[in-house]
Amino acid sequence: MKNFFTLSTLLSTLLVAGCGERNAPSDNELVTIDVTKSYPEKTFVLQDLFDVEYVPLETTDDFLTYGAIQAVGEEYILSTNMGNDGDILLFDRKTGRGAHKINRLGQGGEEYAQAASVVLDEANREVFVVDLMTQKIRAYDYEGNFKRDFAFPDEGFYTETLDYDRDHLLCFLGQMPNVEGERSAHVLVAKRDGRIAQTIALPYESLKTPVYIDGELSVTPAMNLTAPFGEAWAVTRTSSDTIYRLSDGQASPLIVRQPSIQTMDQPEVFLYPYLLTDQYYFLQTQEKSLNLQTFKGFPTTDLVYDTRERTVYRYELRDANFQDHSVSLSAKPNQALNGEVAAFQALQADVLLEANAAGKLSGPLKTIAEALDEEDNPVILIARYKR
Image (cartoon, rainbow, N blue to C red; front, side, top):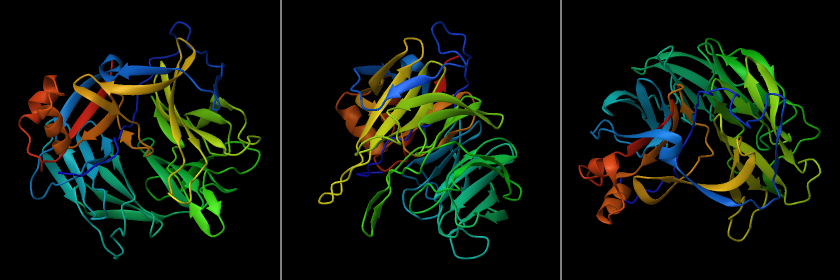
């Protein structure tokens, strides 16, 4: 879409090859990250880490999207739009052709007032819509037929919702506006009836939040408390000094930050997981600061820990087929639903056309761009885990 800029969206679900790599941390060894330290920079080429493909999404009157990609599964790519138009679009994973369109936006009992996030459940051929305005999660089939809904817990909000397994969603139960509260935790929610099947309560000393509060002003920055980690998950909370590996319902410490968030002088710095593989842990720090005149703040730093070198870097991720293009990680915990797909990003058509005219594209991306119109749907970059 012409002149429409979006933040690059990447997310990951990676199949972990195991802990047998030379010099990799053992199961009982914690990785330590100093959030106050200035680390050296390192540039990674996406194609060196993953197998990369590009899928142009078909553009028709019924299938128009800015490319807010929510999931890449085995069968479908799921996209919504940046606004609240209610469209939920399923494109064929291999061809990019429009397959299913859902729009149940409204105020009725079987409708959603807002699609804050959408979860693709290919195992059950359903789509879950998280509606923060009505504090409910609603399930639909691929044709948009309403199946059921269930409410958030009392005084709670599901601020992150992911597909955990065939029977459960993995959610972070937060409390607004401070995001965390004494009852906050990661929970496994039954897809059938919304029952909380298990609570994963991570230990902490006292509540700490990146939410900036000044009198009646409250500003909540983007944050990422849950990240897929192969067949397991990486989970944390802003009040914790530790990022945990969640597997089979059990949380074990994986990464510990220093200094402690409990004793850190202001401005406090928080640490989040973003993309974890067997060799690389991609993380992000976030400083709790805000300029009240410009409303710019919450500066972040992208970090990566190399488990073989046992070294931390600030990093930049580049696409070998797109000169001068940096691939960014998103604060939103979108989903790649199978072990094949590691990460994805929407590339806007007009941006690709401009880059191609400047001679910055090569390989398959250049071939695709030469057939694009500036009003076309985006091209989806899909990074697959190297086997």
